[in-house]
Amino acid sequence: GDVFLMFDDLRDLYQEVILDHGKNPRNFRRPESFTAEAIGNNPMCGDALVVYMSVDGDNLITDVAFQGQGCAISVASASMMTELLTGCPVDRANEIYQAFHSICTGEGDVEEILSNFDEEIAERLHMLSGVREFPMRVKCATLAWHTMDAAVKGENEISTE
Figure 1 (tube, helix red, strand yellow):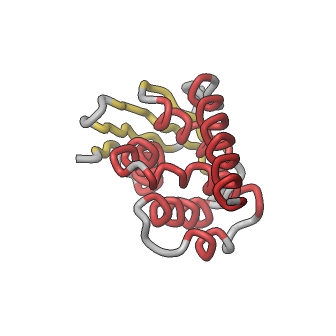
Figure 2 (cartoon, helix red, strand yellow):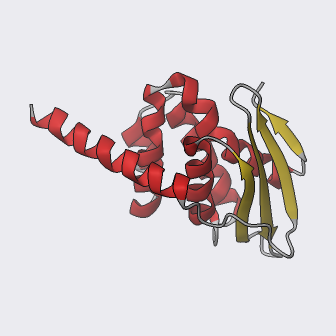
């Protein structure tokens, strides 16, 4: 029964972290300057986020912020994303995005995917990966990430539809 106990602890931690980021989102602001932005919509539950990014000449993400409204999961995921990607090279951000997407949609082995990242990133992605248990919420969790990806690619708007 120890395995279940651990899972419960993890789930409690996951919920705690999600609630914390949902209530007190980090980088919830419109920066004075940014090099890319995109709007993301999830019509299913009315989430709408704007993601702002600054990428320097070396393709390093120097700032990520967001605004908008959404359920706790989409806000928490956006908040955690801004923390994870600030200071990241764009290529690395894309790898993290792809990994997160695979985890959420249940493609591939979570442990194997996470083994490609350092502890902090792996831990954050693992917390967010709890959403795969709730398929209806996957779009909420990935909204900010899709929006960030669109911003990087120079697309200004995405929808989960």
